[in-house]
Length: 338
Ligand code: ATP
Ligand code: MG
Image 1 (cartoon, rainbow, N blue to C red):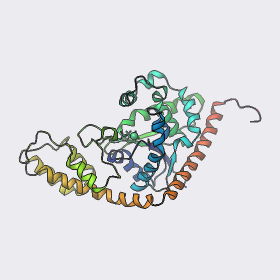
Image 2: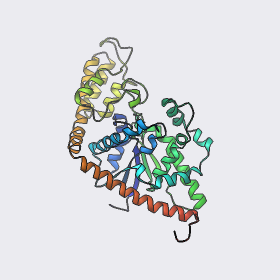
Image 3: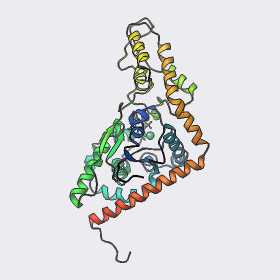
């Protein structure tokens, strides 16, 4: 562990398997930056409570956590270099969250667009206090290891802005404790869904999962939304805004093939079947090494547990030292002798 490297914090809610949208939005950046940054990857189980505090949802978290750690390891996150940790197992998270709640206003949080969308998607009739505080909790996550860089997808941009404001406010009131972290968007900040809707998301049922087998990928791709105007293969088609080509651009390493397909598509010289079967091939080529690594780790559940345990210990260690600095900077009264 090299303490001179700058830090990254980012992560995901354990609500289900990870998909290609997560990959291009944030996972690819994590992989790329594992060497140059000391990385903390958070499995944000407390954040799932903001919309699903019911016992049924909580009962699913354990399985989702294990699958998510497998997803991380499968894509090539190296647990020797990067810490993978469980949010709820870092008690300082709750502590710093409360302090940060004092440093942001309710109207400011009400202006974060994603929170209303989340409330609607979860069919909540009123905004829970905790959901309004979603970006505040995220600020605690990011600032506990004093991260300077946060690789996330576009939908998290407004949240990271709240973190930056809270860090500035804290530093102004109490002294320089926190860095002001930078946002890092993925090369494709939002990946479109297989149905052509703006965002690939498991709740919209338009996702291709990193853990899908080859047959599932083929079936998904076969059913993909393309250019709706193009009812026959000899009609010139639209490449721009066509999700099949967005995925080709993102995942097909054979650029010549992609350019050739685009050219023929525009001229009405290639059928959807060919464009899609070459996409399925490219996606399966991309996913194959991920599947192999996943299988290897899945065979060793105790090793995976140990990875989460040691990552959580590292995160706790950093969190404890940050909280010492926070209490000291604030000058909170301490009971003598305790
Ligand atoms: P889902 O909607 O499938 O449940 P999510 O948005 O709830 O996914 P989060 O755990 O909130 O997933 O986010 C994990 C990370 O992945 C965030 O950085 C988010 O910005 C990013 N992300 C999620 N979906 C996409 C997408 N379709 N394109 C790009 N980035 C994405
Ligand atoms: Mg999610």
